[in-house]
Amino acid sequence: MPLIIFRLKKKALFIVNPVSGGKKKDDVPELIERHLDTSIFEYTIVFTNSVAHARQLTLEAVEKYNIIAAVGGDGTVNEVASALVGTDTLLGIVPCGSGNGLSRFLNIPMDISAAIKNLNNGHFEIIDSAEANGQPFFNMAGMGFDAHISELFSHNKKRGFISYAKSSIKEVLTYKPQPYIINIDSVTYNRNLFMLSLANSSQYGNNAHVSPHASVQDGLIDVCMIKPFPLYRFPEMCLRMLFKTADKSKYVEIIQGKQVNISRNTPGPIHLDGEPQINGTDIKINIVPQSLRVIVGPKYKLTNHV
Image (cartoon, rainbow, N blue to C red):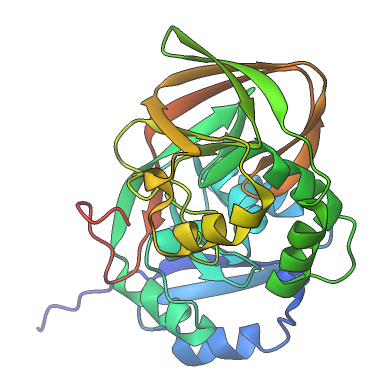
């Protein structure tokens, strides 16, 4: 009598943010059906309907699925990943946002169909996460100019890179640098800064690399201090990020650490993975090493951090 082997299919949950990046997601179910290998997976698709809904859906599903895929931008990825930290469930990413910073860093395809196919490979890495006052982030947190823009952008009905760029160009004309006291692993720095970014990966999104040598697997956070610069050099600063040379600018100082305490004069906006919130004068940043399992793109290499 022949031996019959039954292989259980893996279970995948797709959590779709229908409004991320200003892009319609009506065709996502059809693309999943077409490109996900159903000989490997059985899958479920759910759509979010409010802020923090993706996190709640993930918390309810984490014990039931092998992979939970965030279909959206960095904010959606943050919500899903926040509920997966410290678990064995894999994070999948189908990037559909405005910047897609973590997805780009991990070399996940930007094309939806290709990103779904990438899940079939199942190749994952274990990466670091970080926390700001106990709230997780995975790509980038910040305060100063980029947090100011994120706060303004959150009230804009028009999403996408062009709207973000227009807001940035308009606001840079009037934005004033702020003083910060920054303690990195017990060493204190007093700085007047245009922007202060806490980088787990190298980039904000759209291939704008503020910390070109950052790694999501080194157990460190890159504290990127962008000093005030002449307004005429704003285009140069943008180009440096696109060409991965921001660290070579005299207006950029990058220091790595595990524990970062930041004090500023007044409460104001900060952002976690591009999602703004109003926070107080004191912010504590810490790294949580090797805490998230995420399916990476085919070209991602541990030694290739940029």
